[in-house]
Image 1 (spheres, rainbow, N blue to C red):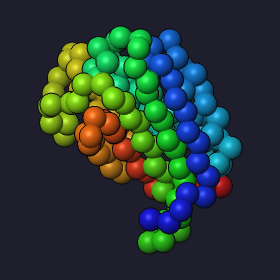
Image 2: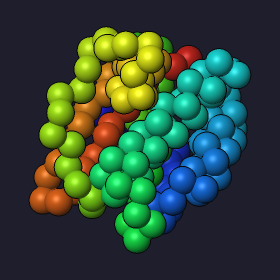
Image 3: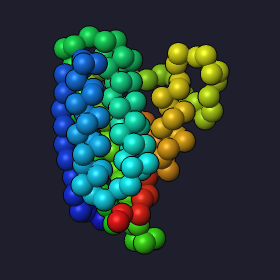
Length: 144
């Protein structure tokens, strides 16, 4: 993967009332890159879902943590497209469950965010290394 053509970094306290600002910032960034409305919406929703997971699950809704968001655009040498990479990291409790490949139940309160992220991105990775938990989302897109 090549160096990012454009990137942004955000950091918020682990409070759900800050998530809408993250969504708004991501949406603006996507549009400035030239994404269409559908692509922009999908990237925004996936990022917000990953941030919500950090706040709700890693920090158990406690406001004393930090959530870090890194977004970058990379040249995709294999195709005539760009690779969007979003990393959402926290230092909360690591995830112990396996990420579901499908929606367990439409009525389930848990797992829907992962399902959406898997449907709207090309890949979703989760890692926990040295106390830093990271969800990485990648999506190839055509920019205008």
